[in-house]
Image (cartoon, rainbow, N blue to C red):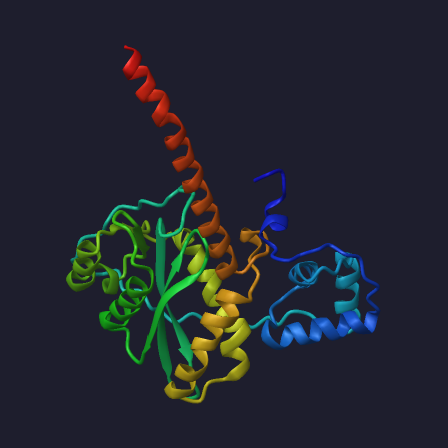
Length: 291
């Protein structure tokens, strides 16, 4: 990629200018960042500053965070079962094991998590583009019925309009293996992929999103009821996670920004291919004329 590190290429408008940042300035910046993204550690704080053109040594950031007790928030959580794999529906083979994506809409992954309210649980189903880590569709419900996952899938298809052959990867849960869900996948040209039994690693990207969601949003705001969750979740998913949260796997770039760069790169490559085809056409015609 023109000899630059991925993080340098994807940081928009980053002019690495050295600025004198006092300890108070640095502390204030960390505190402001933790208002929206309380799980940020010193590495992401470092890259947030770098993207603003401010270079501060990462060890200094860590020292300031320790001195002022500005550590990322860590919660003790417990597991609520959302997967029922004891069913008689077909289990599809794993198509993503060891696979590296090269483009958007190549692999979608999906899963369900719980959200604890004051007196009950509700459930969130979400789909993520594995190449960009962007959440591309989601839905919430008071039950684990397959309609929850269908609503999230419909949302993603409407927004993305994926090409035929896109891989849809999930666990073996009945919500994803049921006839209605599989029919929607086949009708929209998806290849169906499911994790091996007892192997959560293929869906690690979804687990990472759910962890961020709970650390940055759910545990902080303690939703009172379903309406409270429905009001707050869109802002976190669409604005904070997709547009603001930095991902180390993307060169410390948010998913939305990464996708914009990918789209521009693909357009540039397409234009280069067209130029090559145009340049070759006269040569081919001349060769035919002389033969």
